[in-house]
Every structure is written in structure tokens, then in C-alpha cells.
Image (cartoon, one colour):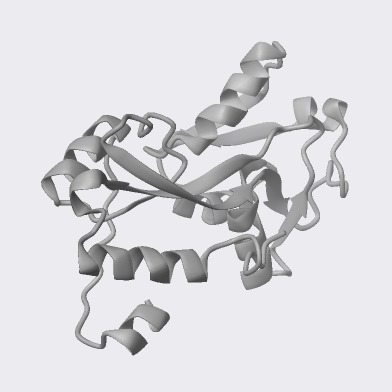
Length: 194
């Protein structure tokens, strides 16, 4: 928001969260300018996309967690209880499907639809959450005495974060400007969470 407001000081930004099936409709009718994230369903001919950077997953837990290690063993991963986020975005599906394919069953103590509830929950428990690494790093940097980040015990494939837009707005000057701002702010070169 800092960069966008510096370039267009009266610009208002509205971030929305909605089920993936509604995103295509919102992009087509102009209710949504950009969809930024992991949206594998937006591959039809009506949509353009631009890869921004590659994300991967990390395990977040409280400092002093009894099973903490820089890289978790599968044994430790399976012994601890987990908080699982079921957000409207699609990235968490990748991790859940990987566990399913490998027939790995965690001890799930909590299901939540919100990533922002995770720090409060983890800080007061021995639960662990597997989340996008940028989020884990952000929480750990925000409160280094509270949160530790660990590498999952499995080789979890990364996923590309992209910006998507409808072809009707491909040549629209405002849309081009916004896409340029997003591409300059979020890319492999500026990815501080690696």
C-alpha cells in the first residue's frame, strides 16, 4: 500500500477473500482487478497470468516447543499435534494433497479458516502449523522470542504465486499500471522470505 499510495495518493485498495469459484466471475465483471496467489483454476483462454515468485511451506511453532528442530524429522512431525488452516486460497491444498498421497496422517487438534489466528494459538500451546514460508517468517520476525520456523520433514514442492486478470482488462491503462506495481513489488528478486 505504501508504494501504491506514493504513486497515486488517492488510490483506495480493497482486498477481498472469496471462494475460488467466484474469483473468475469477479475478474470478468470487473469487481476484482487482480487475483494474486495460487489459483490453478484460472487457466482458461479468458485469463492472463504472470508468475511473480515461488513459495514453499514451513512449519511454525512456539519457541521452546519440545519437538523443535531446524529440520523436523517425520517422527517429530507425526508426534506433535497440528493446527490446520482451511483458507479460501488454494495453496494449502497442495500440502494437504501431498500428505494424502503419501498416506501421512497428522494429529490434528484444530481446524481454522484463518491464518491470523495461528500465532495466538501457537504461542499458547504445543501445536504446530504448516503454512506458506513467507507467513511463517513474518510471524517469527515479528515476535522472535515467541515463534520458531522449521523445515518440514517432507520434500514439499513449491508453488508459483501469480497475478491473474481477465482479458477484457488486458489493455486497460489502470489495470496495466496496477499489474506493473504488483510485479515490481513481488518477484523472485525482491522475495525477502527465501
